[in-house]
Image (tube, rainbow, N blue to C red; front, side, top):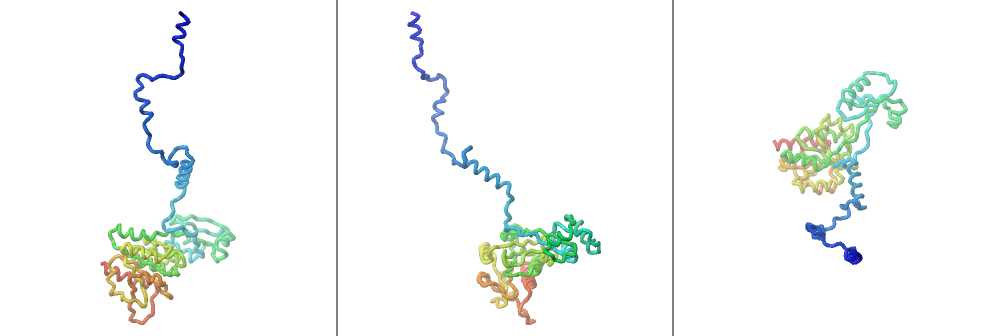
Amino acid sequence: MAGNTQRRNRRTSNKKGMKVGSGGQRRKALEGKGPTPPASERKGHKKNRLAAAKTRHESKRPAPRRGGPKGTNELVVGRNSVVEALREGVPANTLYVQQYLDNDERVREALQLAADKGLNLMEAPRPELDRMTNGLNHQGLVLQVPPYDYAHPDDLTAAAFDDGEDPLIVALDGITDPRNLGAVVRSVSAFGGHGVVVPERRAAGMTASAWKTSAGTAARTPVARCTNMTRLLESYQKAGLTVVGLAADGDVELHELEALAGPVVIVVGSEGKGLSRLVGETCDYRVRIPMPGGAESLNAGVAAGVVLYEAARRRA
């Protein structure tokens, strides 16, 4: 009997039976979990790790400037030049002063102005300043000006539209003298314009000389750079702006141009060559400024000022 009992109770299979009260766990296990996510989203996958590493790298890298890469620092050398730059509010960051320098009136004023503006003051031996300036006659004073932070051309129109105003922009085609650029910036500021656009290459940029000529207005009037002036003007046309080019042989006289009352970009060419061919062909109007005195042409800064005045008059 004992042997028969053992045989009846002995387990003959390792297979487990159905569990009572499983609560439908087996049915849930059979349900689908949706489509397989892409490899870049699956935790632990190689592509997921690479995507995460790229995201961390991008977060550490500074955001690119819309107006393009910055240039290099500019140096203003010489006692008179340094003092004038500081008086005119040129945005410098460091004043280098030669060790054991004679403390004359200009040196004292430069030090006082630099201290008032919170600039870094660095004392350096003469050989170091000679190296920095490539042997220029620095007279013991060197002012370091950081690269100008150019705007993007689209920022100029966006700012005007945000304020509920028709854009008034000046584009410079082939202007190489930074003093002309500074004079245009000053006129744009005076007559309520929204900014200036210059090409990236073969054109004047916002140097210390341009800052000084602008008489401080460059601090509140943006200057943008573009890689291709013709394409920029075409994009402005698509945005609803009228492109007006100044030309001595223009078809329309300035006082006849009604378009100046609306959104407009005024294109000023170089004094010698005027507008380049492609830029001239892109303009909606080629306008001339009547000159009863018989002069052949005007300085680029003066010409821009005359047209800006007429535009401001019509808008008023």
